[in-house]
Each structure stands twice: as structure tokens, then as C-alpha cells.
Length: 166
Image 1: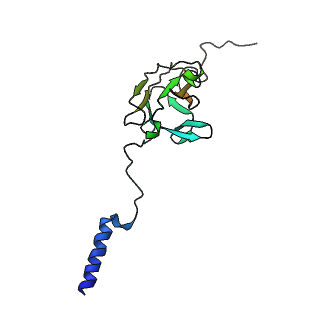
Image 2 (image 1 turned 180 degrees about the horizontal axis):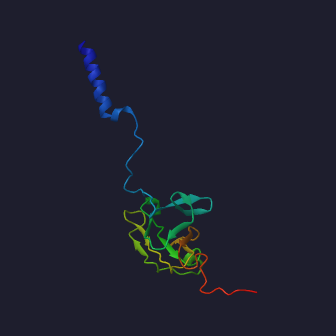
Image 3 (image 1 turned 180 degrees about the vertical axis):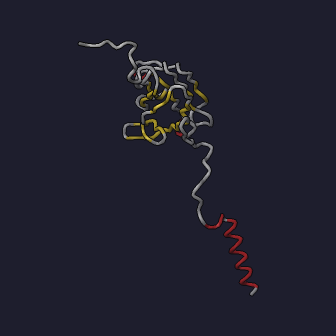
């Protein structure tokens, strides 16, 4: 009888110590992971046959759509961003294609890519040029397109005056 109780106690102790023997559906993200939201866009670097590319929330070179009047973070906390500082330009592929870095729309570059708090913050307005392009400061061909919803040149605008035609 004593052996049965001892074994039962030992089994119960091991079961509790190991978290019940099952697996949890949720795990706390590591400090180096990004959590995407409507205003926090996770940027990572993925290796493809065509070289390294930015991935946006897991999709390689995806278009990013931002709404004028909101503030967004292009989050580069993932360690694979090391050496790949994201920048924005009005020219596809930015400075690698004779463009310049775009500094409007209240852009702030934060930290070192791959470290906590790193990335780029942008607050587009109704007068922000669209499209914009995200690119890697150090490497050509990694980026994609940013569309500003409600930004300058983003679509149809009501004319000031409509003339009738015969």
C-alpha cells in the first residue's frame, strides 16, 4: 500500500512540475519578436532566390497601406533585421535608384535594427505624397510600396467646378 501511495505521489509531483503534461496553445513571445497590430507593422528579413527581401507581417515585399492621420511603426525588433535599416523614399528602391530618403510625414528612425524598440515611425497626413517606397539603407532590391489612404495623389478628388457640356 505504501508503494502505491509513494508512486502516486511521485507521478502527481512530476505531472504538476511539468505543467500538467500537456502543451499550452499560448506561449509568451520572446523579447526579440514583434507583435503586429493595426498600427505596428512587423518587418523582418527573409532570404529568397533573389536575395534578401523585407517581409511585412510575414509576406515578402508586401504593399503597406497607411491611413493619413494615424501613426504607424515599421517594427524592426526581429534579430534578422540586423544591418538592414528600413528607410522611405518617393522613388522605388530609394537611394539605390537615384532617389533620396523621404523625411516628411513626421518620420523618426529609432534604435538599431534587431534590437528592442528599433524601427521607423511614420505619421502620414492628407498632404503626404503617395505612393512611397520602403527600402533598405544598405542593400538594393529589398523593399516595396507604401500607399497612403487619404494622402496626396491617392485617388479621385472632387473638382472645384464642374462645367456642363452641350
